[in-house]
Image 1 (cartoon, helix red, strand yellow):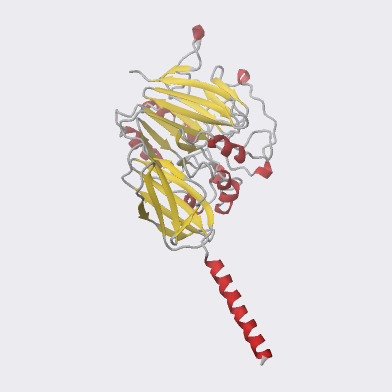
Image 2: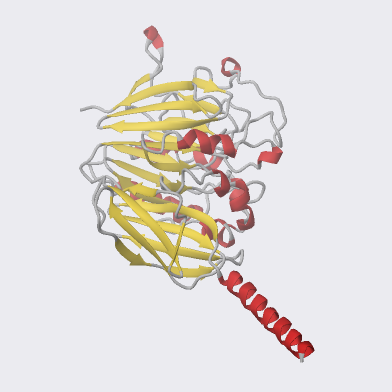
Length: 417
């Protein structure tokens, strides 16, 4: 009798253990913290990833109010065999700060981290701050500094309305399975609060529709797109490997149509892409970008932001032929410009620096011996990001070192009133 009771007890314990393991396996676990996409007009998309889940929702409310609203979203199994949760919020109040919560299978995640975002500003608003940076996804073990960049950006999340990622987001080849280890783990105090708009770089251009496109939710076809923000119009382009544009004929046609339809109320036209055009860095001039100069001049593009060269360089304004649009004669201040010509800036040292790690070739900027005399306005060979502020007809920008916060360069562009 005692033997039978002992066997029954062990059997029940076995069932209990199996049931416990099965329950633990069903618990929702957060794989990737929330990140914000397509913050345009009165809407924003919130994405996060979990181990399981067939339902998801976001609770949100204006900061300081009591009532939570809830919006359901969709889930899908990703190419890395986890679950993507996606919720889009609409009819947001311009400039309002919202608190939010994320739920998968009715389980609230990240209970110990306060989550918030600021809704896009209104059409009539003319003041906002954003950042731009490229080449950020170099692994730390290979000499990359995405950890330093994440911390440097975190200090400014209350100021930034969004960020522009200028390509080469994931080294070495843009694969989806590297996004969490090379990128998202370092930006968990930035991406849940500040939306980002990325473009493809050459290192991302490896089956991008099966990798890059699966990681982001962007306007248009996600290779090239545009959006309005306040009094500015932004255009993201795909320069592929640098010699020709992705879908060149179609992209050029789209670009011209897009720029021609920008309303007069948009005082600023800003293009962001990966490859540099003319440059005095160690990189060559890339035809895909240089070929766009006449279009930029025709439609009045003010600023072109790129990555690719793992350094920082700002050029004097150029015309559609790539010639200097103005001179620095008579002691004119190279940090103050009228909005004549396009200003081109390389910000390709967000997480990778020439001469370090997997890019070991020594490099020291020497613009005095550049093949384009007088083209370079400023340079700094340091890990850096660019912080830009638009106040009506004035754009002010600062290049900031990620290691110590030192300002490496500053300039202003002034529109005619």
